[in-house]
Amino acid sequence: MCGIAGSVNFSLDIPRLTKDLFHRGPDQQTTFRENDVILHHHRLSILDITGGGQPKHFQNLTIIFNGEIYNHNDIRKKYGLICDSNSDTETILHAYAKLGASCLHDFDGMFAIVIYDRAKSELFLARDRAGKKPLYYYADGNSFVFASELNALRNQVDVAINEINIQQFIAAGYFFDSNTPYKNVFELPSGSYVTVSLKSLELKVSKWWDIRKFYSQKSAVGFGEALQQTDHFLHHAIKRRIESSDLEVGSFLSGGIDSGLVTAIGREYNSSLQTFTISFEGEYDEAPLAKLVADRYHTKHHEIKISFNNLLNDVEKILSNYGEPFFDSSAIPSYYVSQAARKHLTVILNGDGGDELFGGYRRYVPFAKYDFFKKSGLVRNMAAIVHKILPVSHDKKGKYNYIYRLVDFASKKGVHTYFSSCLDIFEGYEQFLVTDDSCIEDIQKNFNEINNSSLSGLQKILTLDFEHILASNLLVKMDIATMAHSLEGRSPMLSKELLEYITSLPDSYKVRGGNTKYLLRKLAEKYLPAELINQPKRGFEIPLKKWIDGELKDLVASYLLSPDSYAKQFMKKGFIEKIWDRRIIAGDEKRAKMLWTLFALDVWYNKCYLRK
Image (cartoon, rainbow, N blue to C red; front, side, top):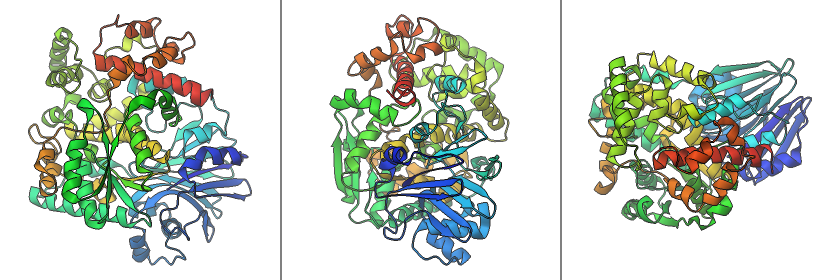
């Protein structure tokens, strides 16, 4: 795991770059220069500690790489690649020399790859299927600069704010696909690569992997065989991710079945597996369920008692780590658990992607029964009438909230059905935004493509979540939270084999009746205590509404109620004050999400853009 950066026709401030990326690679820092090309690499030594330094060179190629290719030895055997080290970086280089961009299809792993090709006089940059490893770039026609993190890029290049994209963040809660908060700065989309001509600086972005292709390959395999095959692929993925490390590998362990299965199977390949669980007080405490798994498999268990006493001092730093306005408040506990785990090891397994792949969210249940994206006008109109008379919901975990949210997204049109069904931040309050739907045109276009496809309602929302929420939010959250502490996070649920197999299975294997993640729950019966099997979706949840009205109240107010609040220019006059004082009717959770989104925007503007 590493941090990478580089440029064409641009002089990098290496000391500043080293400071900004040091946490991603504290073990070694190297800079390569040739003609107008600069490649900068920060190394976190995990695999082939003595021989895995970068950049690496072969024939006319030079590579820097962030990530891990877990099956790289299999690729060497498959193509007869003769390498000098045991480094997966060298495997990538030799595979690219032999196969070109098509070698990406063989890789099981997470990666952001940059290859300097002297023969073609170009740079080749690529990202993994799900977008686990980040890669941002600046291009203005005269120079090209790239980096693993937005803050590192911001501190090299003088950039201006892209206010249309800021409006998109407020409306949707994330930056979609290649969008960032800056003009001329882009994120290379997941499952994509870009070639950059060193002569003209012309860019060509290509999609090399698309999850929709695998949803369209409908499998008729029986449930028993699917269960057995899933078990096999999960073992394979976890085994690879444990053995592809010269350092100890541990596991995050919540009270859910995803991390429970990863831990149970991981214990088979690591007899001294260490597990890490967050312990909260009261309703958010998942530690007792996690301990059942730890006890059953005799792991070396660490229960991390999260105290938010330091939250007031830490929250601005945590949010500014992202380099962009970041909505997901579970970034806070993710930061703290990563900080604690790094005191014990360098590599950690997690259950990321399990919900989006196997159908784990409660909101998937109605979509398995009816395609709400293609609903009739009668359904929408009836839902709108009912929604107007329903009292707002204040408890996001209650049954009433489930019904309220269902009626809400059933009453919406187009992409707003999706917004309402997932993050649901300013849905229903759009009249207070200084924006219109032009800021979400690219999201609407992507939504229309998926909605007009032959996919089922469940497959549509699974695809949307994979391309939007997972890629633009959840994986971003965990990459920054872990790498802030030089901790590498590995996600077996996002292995090549599982991504390309589970997508083809029938909907009923994922959601059956009112049961989410049906296939995985049945598999869990083989490995996990019965108390966990039918528990609702769990994760690093936090009491956001309590924070807004308690520990963080004065800090949030100091940003949002200030005459200099950056967020105010994107809201109708007086809205922030009215929602703060509860003069606008909104559920407690909804109010907290709106205020948190605007708070995150103001923190980014001050700490990342203005760099105060």
